[in-house]
Length: 127
Image 1 (tube, rainbow, N blue to C red):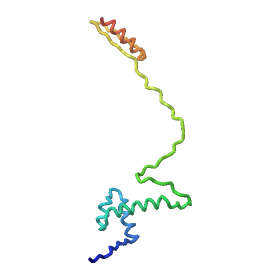
Image 2 (image 1 turned 120 degrees about the vertical axis):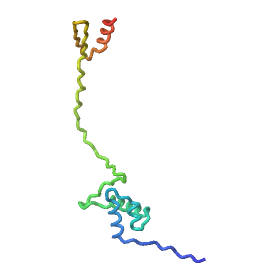
Image 3 (image 1 turned 135 degrees about the vertical axis):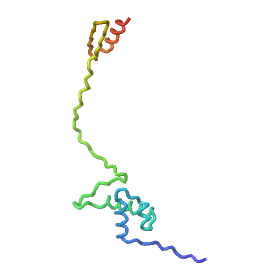
Image 4 (image 1 turned 90 degrees about the vertical axis):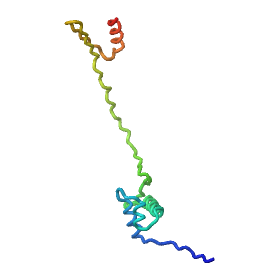
């Protein structure tokens, strides 16, 4: 039985860079980009993970290590403890009742805070 060792294909750095740049374009699909270059999408995903890992471990130009950036794009922020004024509760207008009997009209105005008392008075008055 003839068994020939399988040789892995080697891809140039320029091709990897080009593929990764195309994948980073808005609306680009990793599958479509990899297929257009005759590559397996899993390989391109692997290159993207390697690029992200390298970006996390490389120091920035200023010499400080960059904070890790999660793969999902979520970056936690620390918020300062600033007292935010609480707006006052909205004012409720008064209860206005207008009663008409024949040519006579009576208008009653009750504070909204006394709505229960207004309801009790109205029930008694309508009996």
